[in-house]
Length: 244
Length: 378
Image 1 (cartoon, each protein chain N blue to C red):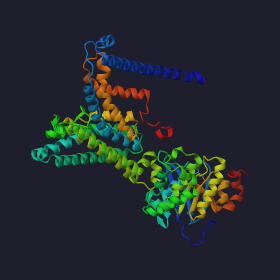
Image 2 (cartoon, each protein chain N blue to C red; image 1 turned 120 degrees about the vertical axis):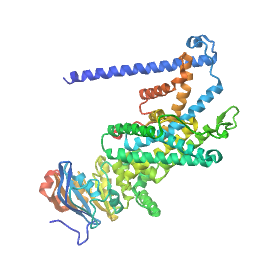
Image 3 (cartoon, rainbow over the protein chains, first blue to last red; image 1 turned 90 degrees about the vertical axis):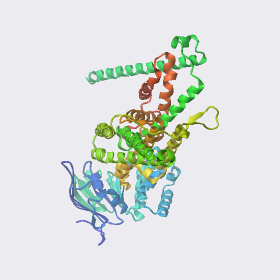
Image 4 (tube, helix red, strand yellow; image 1 turned 180 degrees about the horizontal axis):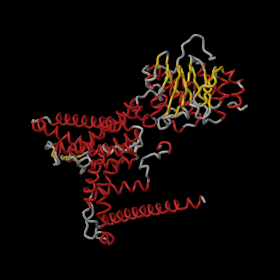
């Protein structure tokens, strides 16, 4: 049933994951796999476990049973920094910039674990060409930027970690409708540069229009797992998420 | 129905407000009258207003005033150094570590032990500068270690609990540290050994005639300034400092950047402890006396300084310390003496805390503090 890129090993994988917050069972027997260079999305309503999925992938939440696998290695008990160092990073929901720090400092913190000074300088330049507006605001506090600019900084900060897979939690949340378009164009641009993207998104139409594959999560269980096109055509999904 | 249930709270709120306004007015009136009386007295001690306010008082001479300001600044920079520890820990963990004053006391205490031993060995007098440096090293090591151990043993297990819990724990830690000091060294006051003569001599500074300051005080200014600049550089310009500020703002995202949050918190305690250590040894050199309760008042005053400057704000902590030091030193003679209040020099602690109350009444975020948004406070 599941669609897999031919023969490659996934970067990130969930094997039969169960997660609890106290007595509340959040994720139920979830299997996922993200392959190098693909763009996949996770759809689902409120409280379906989307954010928990991201947090479990990053090690901010420890699963009760099952395995989180990074490049074939079980990383259940490894800290977030271990995974970040190996190319997993996230653009958090609502961007969560360090508002009291400058834009430059925010970007530099993205490269916190890297030691290659030249590489960092190169990547900074790359981000400045990608977002010329950000370059103008480098010494400003991040909290003073507009929502769209903050989104750019948040993406730039994540890219500074040189991710192989970028997790995105609700990237279009809280953005003006005009910006949502630009934002998705950006995500595609990042994807085209070879970064795998795992996106959690309310805006299912938009997400599926750029994604290769998708999962649908319902009360902690994966109920659909298919190509983006097939999901778009799925009548059930159309009824519940895509507005008919 | 809703209006009926809401009404009593509204009335209560206005009553509290009225009460606070009353206190505000009283404070302003008191300060204004005090200042007017002071000015009147300065113009002429025999003018009617000054006679009415405090008959028989003399005007404050320029040199006496200057002396008050200098000693105020002196105490103030030490308050500021201690306040940094309160402010940094508050910035990162969001609670006031009331045991910080005890960390300071332990520095004064270990300074006494070290200098005393060096004095007995005859090194204190013969090799004063290396002996002093060694004493500083020991004191700073003790206070830094103490702060780090305190975090590990008392506060880390409470991470994630409501912030009232570490706050109460810190009061317990404070009692513990104080009583261990009494147990080990006894309740009597200890004297630091005599300083060399050139330390207590007065020097003219900046070539201004009449502006003479004791060697010890000059040393305090110089060392505090260096520590402060060093700390500023560390927090604002280094990678670890950047990580510290990131952790202070958002621990979860800081971890997402790959920052080791626990290690950063330990560093924050260590730096705060080191600053208290420096302040402790300076305090020891200035007052040359220490008891187990030495940490209490400076600790509370430094906390006041941190609030004055806006908690969590490092520059503010320093400015708050200086404001408090000068305020409590000058305040009694400027505001209280002209009003004929007896024994004003005993009232400097009262002045310091009234200053705290005044700041909380007029500008609760502190003189230099940023207004915390609701999400920051949560």
